[in-house]
Length: 367
Image (cartoon, rainbow, N blue to C red; front, top):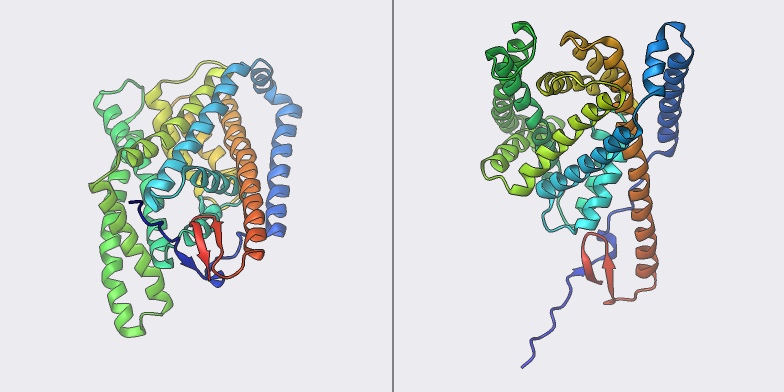
């Protein structure tokens, strides 16, 4: 006897979230600023007389190592997609996860604030898959915290390791112990802030109501910290592999650009300088240009890397880190928009109780 066919879930047309939109005027402004900064940087490197050695490094750069850096950036993006899927929705199709993840990375290359620029795309996809707003907010906080965990743990491990002589590298205790202690304190403060936010959220609900703005901010913060700790207590191999890959492949890009332009510093020194210097990306400028560059170069110089070598490698690293996500993100977003256009046509021509495939939901019955 054949099994009865499973009826697809019902979905009202009004329950579909609107197509993801980006403020085109804002994106154009960011692209103009981004292009202006890139052109200005190129002009300075090309024309300023005192930068002849830096120009020579770029002229004689090894293209194979630069291509290796670009490939590593793609692998870092794949790792980002793996973390996105593991944190938000393990049942989401890999292809859709990849398109949303790379579209987010492309948006983050243009829109600033430490990776927040692409969150609208992720939120749209998650709503499409049926996730409620509260869970999206909670998981977004957890996602941000989890992607910073390898960085913080790396500073602790490398800082104390260099100070104790476990890793080779000529650095002072100030540049090893202090960053490690700050990173350790950051972990403690993050856990404590989650507990404080939970208590403050309960007080805000009692005094101002569940719909108050303060409660709306404190709730996701408290639950997001709790969610990230819960995911770390029972980590999946995909989550751990994605988190490590997202960081390791990105550090390897900087190592590849050093190799392209000359000799690379020791791996421990390169890693701890990267982890500390990347904090400049929190400065709200398109693609982190300026903040990340100065932060990385300055930190590398503090760790006794020659300023010319550091500047050349960081500029090449930043070019790869911006161009590869921007190109792949544009392709991913175009694929999403084409799918949405086809979906809209299918829904428009579908009558009541008709079956149609909806992005994020699969085959549904429209009512």
